[in-house]
Length: 340
Image (cartoon, rainbow, N blue to C red; front, side):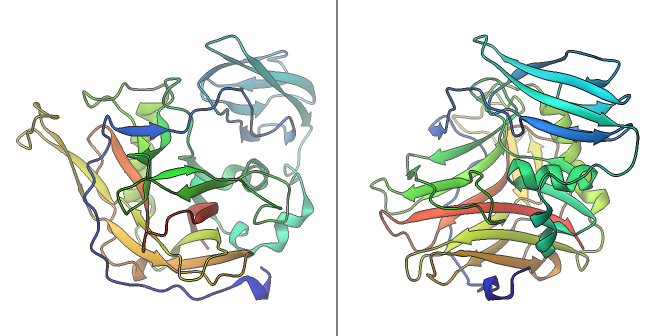
């Protein structure tokens, strides 16, 4: 970790705009060109690596005797050699990753520089946003990756913008790990005087259609309760870049969402999910124009308590600008929960 990139986390009380889990008025950020998180990887025999696409795809391997690939993009090294993993979208776009399988040993990181960052030296990770190279470096330490996988293409998770309150930003420079990878960049906009976005798991709730992998997402959400028992050992880590004084954002981690058949309204005639155990922290980075890194122990995040997820269309992370500052860009380098 680079010493000049730490800064204090400010906690503040905030009256939030109320959000239901997933509504029809969201505006997904939709990709049009198929891309993968990696174009070439090296894995050891019996090791795994998760490939991800920016839209829903089917996966295939050119040589199953060397490397297999699951329906969710998990590559497993079978024997020493080379194979090509290909992703095919619904509109017949293809993208490939070249896989080299070694006889044994630890899967090498793609770039040695990732070892310079303390947040990537933990034991276990639940990822919300993280670049492909850093994800590859972590390898099997990633318990589950909740990163967006394109709802419109029938993926199970997507980043959506409430009522057009954010627009697409323009990433400039290098990522939080000094690499030339992309990150999430949003500009506060709209006319409502607020800006909010959410990372949502869409398991059919009557308003949204279940995507491929939705059942796995739900199982992973419930795994949080069994994995994270000592909140003093786990941290929320976020990287932000801010060029505007006093711009701040509230990150809310959703602790549970349980279906309640008695909670009925016009949009949910059969009932709906009820969020609880929500942990909220307001992050106010200095206006340096450089990446700054936040760590907050889960035990120090008010309200956070992981419990059951039984419902559909559940938020798992929300981000709200506070205060609202029209035209200000938010650069989100990464967001994940990890055990040191």
